[in-house]
Image (tube, rainbow, N blue to C red; front, side, top):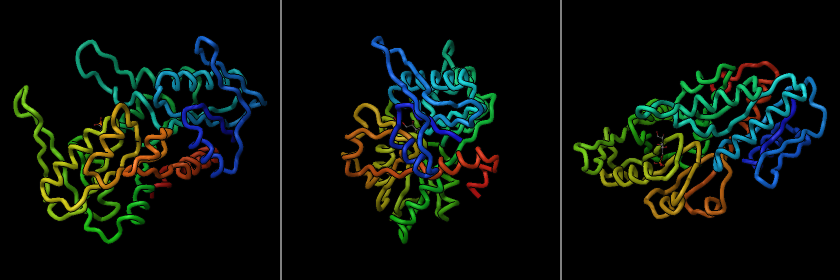
Length: 310
Ligand code: R5P
């Protein structure tokens, strides 16, 4: 087993390396003056089981291209097997045609990764489980929930907890967390009654006096979480926390969360944190490095990955 990391999330890659007690394959991943990606593997990888760690997060296209070029370099260096480890799979939200004459970019990106030469994919909390099927190679989709549950027990034990799905699409994820921590479930139902009128937030379930845990796969602009928190507090919730796997946090998201009524937003380290995120008083990060490290070890030793979640 050998590890190689792109530049998108060095901190997470190093934490995975520490967990596995493995150093990284010597390689140079750099840019030509015109920004073309150039990769040089500086040690023999012939016959090796290679794991390439790279999130296709901001800047998504640069990081994706780096991943593709690294995979190509490994394939041409006769690696035995190449697993693309994607802690965050960018483009996942483009998983269907939202209108006529639009692309399904998640499928296109899956094709690119496969065509570059990946033999397997290891990722975390895909935006929709069925994206696994976009890859015609074995794909393991890990769940960050066990890491979240540990944090919830550490920080919120003894609270009267209620898990909240911030939209109807997230109910399956929220129900799974509610089951794991033995809590009730409520749903934020966003509706626009008539075109041109603003969205109305209805809460399905009684949140009065409850400590609410919003759970989601992605926080991007932060609008979904902040609006849901306002609606829950208006309906009498005692406090609102959020647990989200991927902190995309683009534009003014960090400021929006900092100024919101959310007590804390807990994200994982699937995407590298900016200084602004690291300094934000109500954003906290938990690590999925041990989870990914364990899964890498199991894949390399041909052991079950699903039993990680039993
Ligand atoms: C939507 O389906 C996703 O699960 C997230 O709720 C969404 O991407 C969050 O976006 P934002 O933070 O911009 O509201």
